[in-house]
Image 1 (cartoon, rainbow, N blue to C red):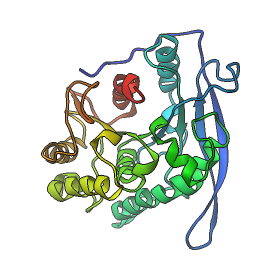
Image 2: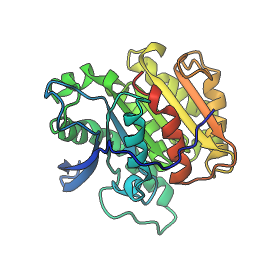
Image 3: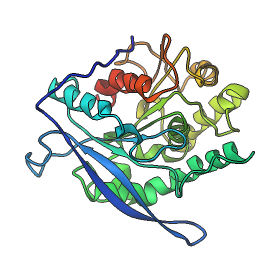
Image 4: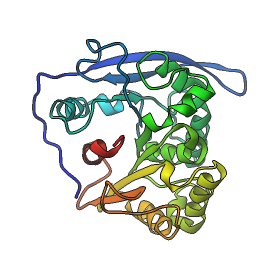
Length: 289
């Protein structure tokens, strides 16, 4: 069952930090970006030798690194969950796949969004992870390729809507750097935009091939997907999930302590941050468990 989060106060409040970094695009352009970073309560007072798991959480279409934090509910949920020991405290990073102010005009919009989320997977490893993990106390002993690969079990990636599309691309392209994935209210666009619904068999097969080509197996990752019955992404997500269930590498289980593939549907939930926050809340204790 998915849980619903209700705001309640706590004295154990984390802080919001920010890291700035430069992305060097293939065409030579240098793009200045930033990511917001949630640091759990006590981070600045704990032993400098303590390390923290890290969840990277992507916004939806037309969003930015502030989108998850525009309401105080996300930060309050994290504060309360860690204070109440629902999970060991971890760091949450809020980046953006956009390189410039997003534009919605024109028939090529969906394909443009698809390309941006695909390209972001390269940016993730080359620029975002080194910038963040040289700034906070994660598990990477070094932020070179070897250090990031060695610490993958302490790193997760998730997102809402186009952030879920981004998450599926991270699974396809960056499985050696992340062990848990949280695609929320969005399908995989590896084959084509909205391909989770229009071409679910091919989409599921692409995801399975990514595991094989990475040299990994079903024990090396976990997927936590969710959506709502009234969500505009429901049909696209559900069709893909059903095809993934047919493939042996994805071991589906309703029990969040078993298998490597989980999918929950919230009755009546729509396509909104308020609804998706409940999915994060429900899965939070299991991401790094």
